[in-house]
Image (cartoon, rainbow, N blue to C red; front, side):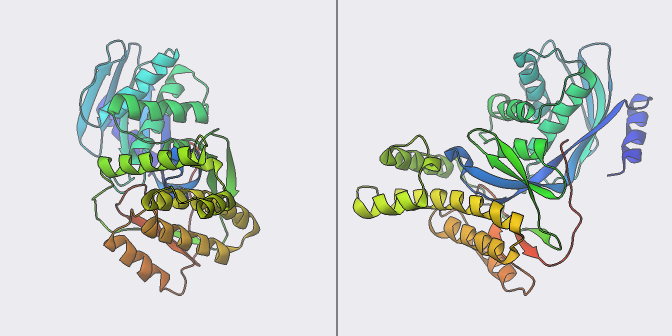
Length: 352
């Protein structure tokens, strides 16, 4: 995105120059699926697609935004926020959470654009939320706190928009930096930046199957994970090691077969994330690819959230000589998957 074009668009609509230009990236999750709501570990990275906002502060409490991609204007007053429909609800939700937390936020004029594909599992909504948070903090003189802004953005999506999501997407958009993945503890929200291997490209491919893990199936799997955690006598499956899982499930057989499979995926996936961080630091690309392959196989066989299109694409990718590993990389049944190749690529991105 050329900021000059964004500045020109702002000048066209508001006959002035913007005071700030902010951005927030989308993300892809390298490994750690369905571990977030089990208090586990994830390893996302920011991608080279983002949401951009050019803005200037107003002297009143109105927010006026022009969506360049949708060719739509939206205006709302910070003193009288009411729920409605459409993309602007993500912006209003962030404003509401900032105010609810006690921040005095200012209004602004803005134009927004972006190239994060919508509905492709790359967290376009989180990118909108974090770009909005950065916009409000910029015009209101609020210090940027990535963890807090990620939490408030998640609350905006959960409580205002009404979409159930974990914290991974917002944290990745808020805290990732160039050349690194974000090793995130979803319980404590502590994070580290894990270096991505050199001479490796991360390729995101899309099956275009927008089926998604429907609410009933998603809730069913969450319930099964909670049932398994209760059976193990822990707060969440994150607290069960692979060794403990194998020992107890061999000694007792009272946990149902389906619930056992769900638990095995989450527990082994957490172990794979922890191992992936270590092998990234050592530069062992071959082992990293093996971990990603094992992750997909576990999602297919134990958590049962892949589909035929995904499995076929993964198999095709694995057949390529330059592919180190391939896996599904969404927390629902849809679409994107990725693989490591030996080609070098430009990597993006930092905090918004």
